[in-house]
Image (cartoon, rainbow, N blue to C red):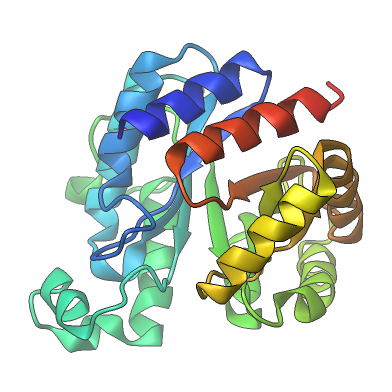
Length: 276
């Protein structure tokens, strides 16, 4: 938690505009309660947007998620963003079942689709929801992103005319990604002001050789696909090229390192090379 707050404070100090937190359970790579972490980060910073990247909606009530993020939006106006996705986020089947109280029908694809539709409805102030209207009332809803790396998530984003976030660090994602983004933009028929957004994994070393050596160590340890490896200037140039390829207006960077201290150093290096 302390490292996460430090990272967010540094990102804000260096002029970055958003800091998102992923949801993971029973793993060492993330935090299990992003809504709590976001409140802590927002309280310790002043302007940076904070968001979930993303809520594993299949495990939760859409009404509850709407109320949690409306409460955050009321507490930190204009700074809260809500990303939702199907997963993975949970590596263990026992944990997955426990999150839905043993009701495995909740994990079906069509149930997730319904939950996304319900969440969109709960966040829409024009909907007459009667007793289902989420609290607190009269709060501007946080912007919603559908997150994913497949045609099904693209279809959802088009159907609900929502923002879309594409995750580039899964095997094969770089090949299928640009056509999916083209499909998304064509389906909307307009260029959304806030998207699409992409998430890329980065190793930013002091030098290219340092970064490549770190990449070799992490790859042998079975880490995810690394999209960008290099010195600070090379990393910024590669990220800008990916943004152009994906028609992305914003990028989320997952810094890959073997320690929290190294993550902070990578963020300092990368931020120092960004042209604001």
